[in-house]
Length: 94
Image (tube, rainbow, N blue to C red; front, side, top):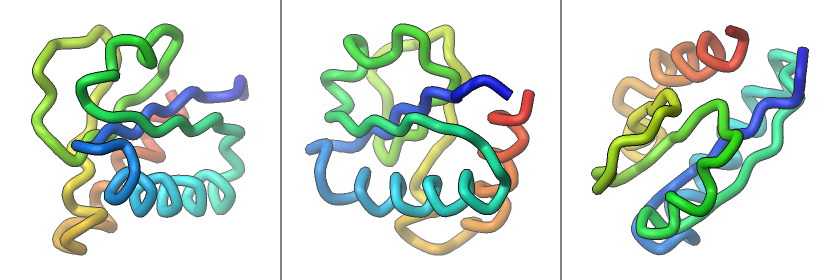
């Protein structure tokens, strides 16, 4: 499997994206997915999406991208987190 590029976006590119990045890194390790995870502000997303396999965002995206996108809010609230982890794994294994 090729290395997967995952971009995690949040309002500031620091707080919630770090929580999400850590959880996705753990998932990738468990599932044997080789991944490069980047974090950014949602306003910077356009400069990070080139070559990305997946975007996970904890906030509303202002633009549409030709990259699969998953709502990362469940990683913050805990509500629906397991289902969202499954979605992330399925998308990365495509």
